[in-house]
Image 1 (cartoon, rainbow, N blue to C red):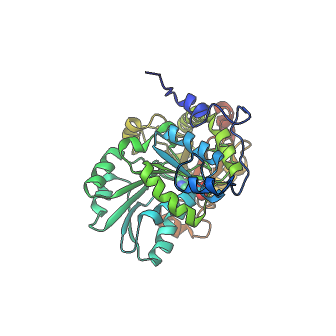
Image 2: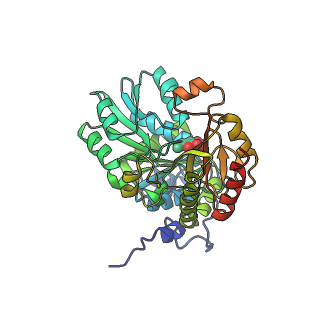
Image 3: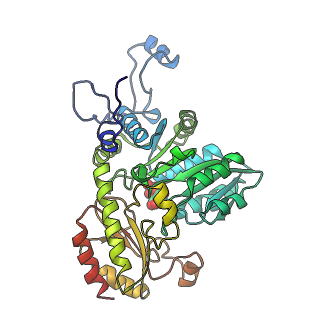
Length: 393
Ligand SMILES: Cc1ncc(COP(=O)(O)O)c(C=O)c1O
């Protein structure tokens, strides 16, 4: 039997790409078109009867550049199918709307992306979908499941404390209770963890982060079994949140170096987290690759790398944190993560700006918390920069 390449980097470069393309370009062309023509009415009949290979009749239903990017993502995640969206949030919201109906109950872990929580709390509540927030553990999830629970949503690792779910235990609990499982795997990426292989039903990514990898596109993806993705695609055709062909091309291009980038981001974060943990001005470091992290054991079993994001608390408060960050020469202040440039932020001043210190503390966001997303710069340079910055506290 012919040997199929399975290496991650080989799949990142060649996965999903057709070897022969019209006019023989090496790279996938950008099909910049809103619609597709039919040679004659017989061709139209043949298309709607499913007798031809063509992708779609209109741009909202598909595009060859988009399909190539989806095939590559599916190859990397070991998924039957993938579907791209205009943003990570669009992928999350469309998936939930496709799965849940009035009267359903959702269990969601409380460390999830704040806009996902906001969608469930504010928007879905208006449509009679109810929810419970729980700690990111299989036990807390099991305790929250009710007869009407339809869906479990969690990240793994979560943001900002990088909690790692025991996926095997979660799948076992949810399968028994017939609850669908959706994991936001943005922080892990398929390089470090592939939840579908544990039996999770659906994976979501903000491809804005590691998969795009260059801080230049917004996009989202859902991955899972073909029938599930097909059903969600039906709703996407109505909701309209597709990823445009040019962004799909940038995603394809970014993915070719994905394995190389991840390797460097994993190792940068490991080295920097060890440095931070040993520094006297740092109170606590949250990184699942450190033995001090509460989920270190499960992360080691379940993940092949721990990602490029580190959260840490400095000795001080908001002002000391700002002084530290303002003195840095390499990481820049910005939300987002996963790209080749290192980014840093004080969550209290970025995602939770409008809250008071007391309100933030009530949801576990402390004034001395810093989140650092490592890029692909050299670890020695980043560490030297952080060191001089910490001296300014
Ligand atoms: C874990 C996680 N999921 C989803 C999203 C939303 O993705 P996007 O910004 O591409 O809509 C983000 C964005 O920060 C995120 O961090």
